[in-house]
Image (cartoon, rainbow, N blue to C red):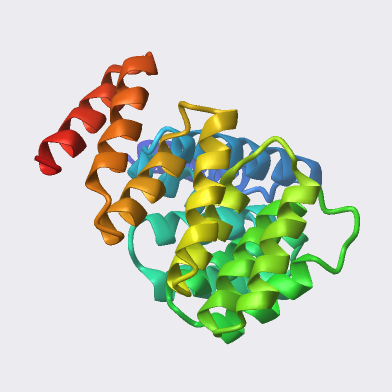
Amino acid sequence: MKKWSICRFSMVLVAALLLAGCQSSATKPLSEEDQIKRVKLHYQIGLDALHKNQLPKAFDELMKAEAIDPHDVEVLSALGYAWRLRGNFKKSESYYLRAIRSGATSSIYTNYGSLLLEMKRYADAKVQLDKALEDPRYRNQFVAYINLGDALLGLGQFDDAIAAYRQAGLFNTGQSFSRIKEAAAYVSFKRYNYAQALYETILRENSRDRTALEGLVRLLKLRNDNPAARKHLKAFQEGSTSALDRAWAADELDKLR
């Protein structure tokens, strides 16, 4: 009986030691190289989910990355964007601020500035966008200039806003959004003739630019020029290859009857 107890005790002891060894192996800290790899993997999966509008999956992956490295700038910025998409601006701002403290890039200042614009904090947005533009190597300066134009417009600085929109056009000549923003700014300050001319110029260059047409139609309605609005909508409807765009034009035409 005594021998059996000793044997049993030995088996339990060995099992306990084996278990302790397994636990020790499971909790062994990751090497710095492995940490970086895992953070990047979770970040890339999370970013892909964001692009596909799969927010729960994006949060799951990005939070896993954050748990491994709570100071990774790209992860913090992506979480800031994810919280913005979810509609929680306060949480979004907290992540952008953490990213800035961890070493922000121009793109993060731009994205944070864009969030502040949505919150109508125009002066704060301008500060962040000015920081984004400090680096002459920043490849998406046109985006920062468009947002800066919006901030300046919100502050009532019309001439400076127009200058920012035009600067955006110089940095990226292939996009029309900065000119559409400029036209909208002219509408805001009741300079309707120039706004209409600018919208029509954009549409002559690209008759399928629905965003420009939307702005023009709003302006023509404001000026009580429904015949001109109908003319532009019919031309767009006939020339469009998109079923959704044609349906939108048809709905707009119905509203003008």
